Image 1 (cartoon, rainbow, N blue to C red):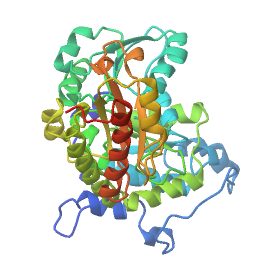
Image 2: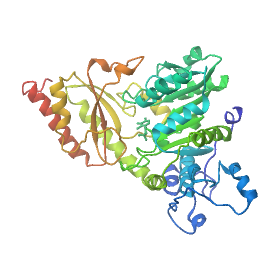
Image 3: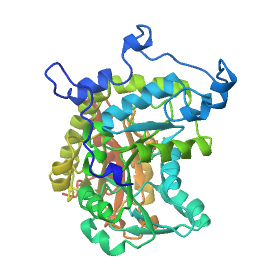
Image 4: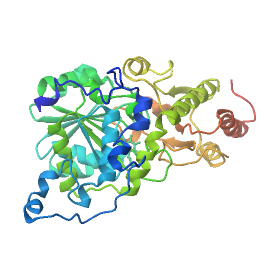
Amino acid sequence: MQDNHDREWPAGPTNPNGRAWQDPTRAVHAGPRPRDQRGLINPPVDRASTIIYDSVEAYMDRHQGLYDEVIYGLYGTRTTFALAEAVSELEAGYATVITSSGTSAIALALTAFVGGDDHLLVADCVYGPTRKFLTDVLARFGVEVEYFRPDIGSDIAALCRSNTRLIYMETPGSQTFDMIDVPAITAVARSRGIVTAIDNTWATPLFFKPLAHGVDVSVASATKYLSGHSDCLLGTMTAASETIYRQLKDAAARWGNCASPDNCYLVHRGIRTLDTRLERHQRTAMTLIDWFLEQPEVVAVRYPAHPADPGHAIWKRDFTGASGLFGVQLDRLTPAETSSFFDNFSLFQLGSSWGGFESLAVPAWPAPIRDFPNGEADGALIRIHAGLEAPQDLIVDLDAAFGRVRAMRGGRKTS
Ligand SMILES: *Cc1c(COP(=O)(O)O)cnc(C)c1O
């Protein structure tokens, strides 16, 4: 696994002055050029299971093409490879494997590197279903899973053992938005030959480039911002090196994981407007947070891009932007207040898969599944996804929700 550690990071396609294009430009053009697909601006949608061969010799040799050729529908068509190329360009990776969902990308990235009797270190703030996969599947196969505090930094060295194969991170963490010092952890991992992987769904490759911070595998749910329209599921695993890429591609092939061509097409289309959408999601999130902080019932906000967040310094150092998902911690709400708050919105919807155009608000209870709870037990944590609506309309909707709670508490602001 040495080949990925001291390599030069690809600059991506360069402009006429020999410099890398900016990310917004890359998002618009990433993937095969129209001249490589008969002039089509968008990639063709290939539907295929069977691929035919000209000769017995070509047929017998077909599996050598697993990593970069169309050999069987399961392993990807032109549509899949076009999207993989685009995502890899944005993540500044060696290559990307597209999977059926974010959850499958996580499961495959984990199984690609660990087996029986291996030790796995996992950030305590990972996505709930990631935790379920570790407990319900990997632990059954004899992998020892140990969770670490998201703020552990280089002290992770003390947890590394001779059989530690993988360190798995997610930042900001699901629900609690903890910031992890990624370069501190990858420096420890590199010195010991341990592979690192991270869930980069929240930031998208436009706002955080894990591989440039020493991570070996960046996984993401493309279901969220890359798709952007709440109508399809897809996952990505981007590798820092050829060795890692081959391990990921092998894992997807062996488990028979396959992405639908329609979903690949939709996500590729979503990437074209990703930068524009994220700019708006981010701006609206900040507007809503400033408003939330003026409400007496709000105890804290969790959005690393906001100076009030404890993870702000790391975010500022490593990230170039923020998306539209954040947490708000309120005074404890009674069950009746919780229902009244969430059940009666006009614009905000109660739904969990964020990253689409619409605003969402859901209650969250991270504490019960955590090894190291992060203060949220003292109140109600709500998770907001700032959609693309006019921010002032969203504030009207939120103001009414706080009004309902205040009315139940006696009709008066508690200031
Ligand atoms: C939603 C989500 C996933 C899972 O993605 P699916 O495409 O829904 O399977 C993984 N990680 C994070 C952080 C998510 O929010």
